[in-house]
Length: 429
Image (cartoon, rainbow, N blue to C red):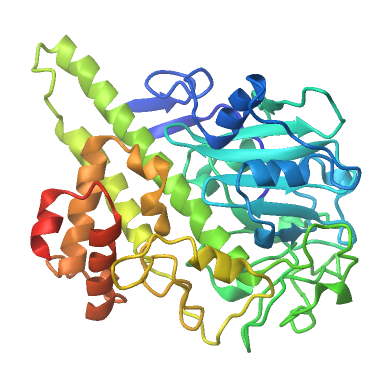
C-alpha cells in the first residue's frame, strides 16, 4: 500500500483554466472538519469513553483493530521497503497490513508507530500515526505534510488516497525502482501483481510476483515466479509467529486492490464536483447569473468523473481469472458474511474467485459513507448511468462483460439493499 502519509497536491480540476489546491476552497483538505473512523475514535478516547489496551508483543495493534472493527483475517504481509519505517522492514520481518471498508492499519515489528489511514466521508484518505510507546493517554496524530508521492498522485486518481504497489524487491526488500513498478487494481494482469508482498493461497497455473525477491541486480525483473506460486503455508518462507495471523491471504489482496482505487475514484468524483460548482458559483456572481446556473464545462466535468466511477464500479476491464483462486484464512467467509443481503440472500460481497473477484460485478463500496456523501449532482449522474446499464438502455461495448443475468441480479440486489435509490429504480421492479 506504500507509505501511510500525504501532503498538499495541486490537482488539475478538469479544464484548461481551473486549478484546484487541496488546502484551498472548496476542499480545504488540511483544515476542514473530518468524521472518519479514526477521528471518531480519538474523540471517544478524549471523552474517556474508549481506551486502547497495550500488550508487550504488538503494542496497541490488537486494540486498534478491535476498536476500528478491522478483522485479523484481513492480514497481508509486505516485505518491500515502501513504508516510512522501512529500516525495520525486510523479507524476514515484513510489515503487516489489515483493513476493512474504511480503515487501513499498518504494523511493523519493533516499529515506533502503528500506521493508520481512514476514508473520510468527504475529504478522502486521512493519515495518522499512533506511537507504540506505552502511555496513559495514547492518541492518534494526523499527518500534516509528509510523503505526498505515494498517496496523492496519479497513482491515486490525483486525490489523497490509497494504492497497492507491486515492485521488484531485492533480498533486503529494497525496490529496484529503475525496473518499474505497477499500481495494481482489479484490471491488472496477474503477472504484475504483488511484487514485494507475501501471498498465501492457491491460483492454479496463473503466476504473480509475490513471495520471491530479485536475485540479479542487473536484471531484477527476472523473478523465479514458479517458486512463489501456490504457497499455502507461509511458514515455509518466514517466521509468522510474531504476527496476529499466519497468512497474507490472496483473496484479501484482490479485494484490497479493487477497494483502494474505488475509494480514490469516489473521492475524485466528490472533489471534481465540488470544484466545478465552486467555480460556477464564482462566475455566476461575477456575471450576474442565477445562483443555480450550471455551465456546460461543469456539466462535462461532473459527467466525466461520474462515468469513470460507474465503469470502475461495474468492473469494466476486469482481469479474467483462468484458474480458481482460494485463500488461506477466514477472510473470504468473513467478508461475504457482512452483507447486506437481498430478499433472496444475495449480496454484492458474494465472491466468485473462479473467473472474477465478485459473483455480481458491482462494487460493495456503493454502500460506503463516502459514496453516500457524494454531492447530489454527481450521485444523480452515477445512479442514472448505472440504472441505464443494468436495464439495457445503455448497450455500450465496454459493458458487454455483464450478462443479462448479472444485470438483473445487481438491479434486484440494489433495489433491496440500497436506501437512497431514485424513484425510477423502484418503479422498474
